[in-house]
Image (tube, rainbow, N blue to C red; front, top):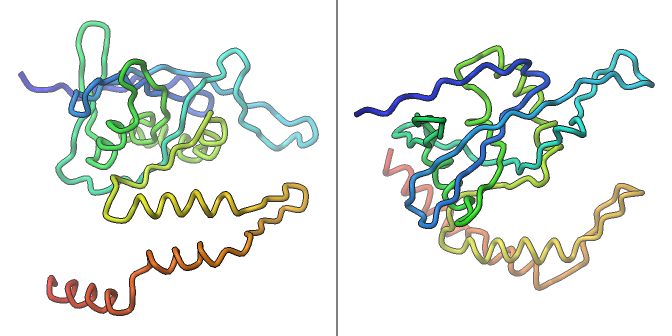
Length: 214
């Protein structure tokens, strides 16, 4: 029996509502990805000091608790799928391999996780909805409880790079009043940054390999 493509229900008002994907738990990494959608309301209110300026805010009653996922879409070739749980049956949405891996790493083992992901939470086949929701994406991320930046699966040396970023963050001072960011001088950090950068010799080798591949 073939899989049925999920049919989105139109949002009542794409400028006032968003979908949130509830990622079902999976004990094993290879367990099937399953989600359900919930709808949350946004309210467009005119700011009192600027009568012509529209501001998007979350209503207090329907304030959604979700995490926003930022990731690289990756190639759309050889797509994967995520199952959408409905009342009596399930259907699927095609997603990129990059998103598939991200969701597998992010889901919890024993409890659901609410996330906002553009590829899932916006109906990519509805140009009207997509145009409005894409324009409001800044608000989707601003209103999220947390933003997750998925850079991809770990590669050789990536753990050292992430630890270096944490070390840099610990040496940064931000003054919100002056709007300034300063970094404490650290010869150790500077040397570690240089150690992770490709040497001129490695860059030349990479260019030769690329040329031969072409």
